[in-house]
Image (cartoon, rainbow, N blue to C red; front, side, top):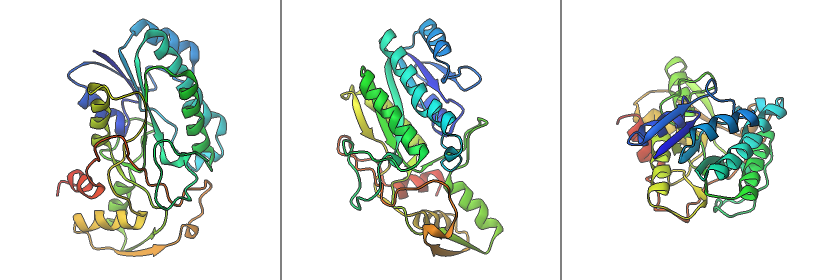
Length: 278
């Protein structure tokens, strides 16, 4: 099988390269293909003719997106449309990754795969539009939603460190940290998500929407506390409301991703322990 991985230098992309290594893998990042250029997408991908296209590229600077609406929609919506169209043209399986932010975040019990979306920020609206394009175009696609991705930092220019790594670094420099004790969601370990992706394809699950986060949920404060405990780092943690920090984009207060279609992934605590090699 010929597998094209887009966003291959990112946190998730590099794990997809590893998991699909038994196949013929073509790993492209932004310097290899501008996914917002429709003509380039069709020319390069039709010529390559992969059997599977995995799109882990995204614009995910949530606050900056409020000022860069056009770029955000170009990457998270228009590019998805082009990739879905070319996938249909060549008969390829298309995998795209979504976000918990497409939900309004008012359901304390979490959200199932088919629940109604109500995105509140520019970033969330762009991701929701990408989902709409996928559904309209149809074909052989998997949409996998995730939340709070963590894992080995990517090597690409646009890659950013996960919240886990940022907290661990800050805790080594400061005696105390204020951390938001709100916004309940489900952390996602990049290697686990890559494995789920391969299992979906290998086991020929029905095409459609899936939730790929790890099991369980936590606030930012709880996630930070678990990471510091596992690494035995002494730093006073101060729980604060989300309003304590000025942030341009609205975040969902409750966006736990409920997995009703697949075998439950291991808990986020177990995944975090694995990442931190405890």
